[in-house]
Amino acid sequence: MAAGGNLGPGIGNIRLNQQERAQIVEFLKALTEDRVRYERAPFDHPSLCVPVGYAENPPGVLTPDTSAGGTAAADVWAFVPPVGQGGNAVPLQTFAELLLGVGRDGSRAHTLQQSCVP
Image (cartoon, rainbow, N blue to C red; front, top):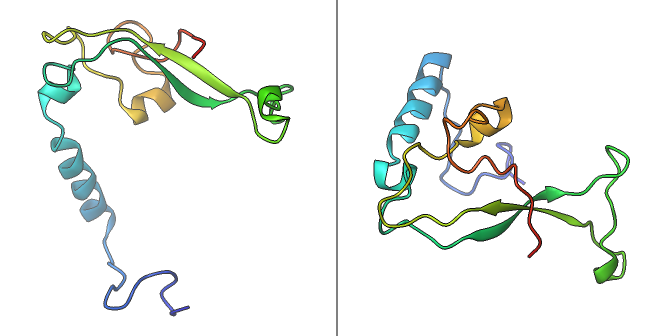
């Protein structure tokens, strides 16, 4: 392996200061357009049941999926309600907001709090 870790040939490390890192993050956030953020056509969808993690019991111990013969962890599923072509009145919850618990007050769409069975 190369001294730079798993970087391929011709790829070098980029040395950025904190301000440059923050600027790149803000640039990447700016790439999401409002049709996506508010799920307006063509990004509208029917209701969905999506995996959001693995069941734990007790905390820190994965629950086996008995339907898979106990060789895999059981998924936890969340309901995403249907959205028509007009989209949502509030934006989607970002991953950073999800981690911080932002949006559970209704200021964000799809906070993945309602469970479902696929």
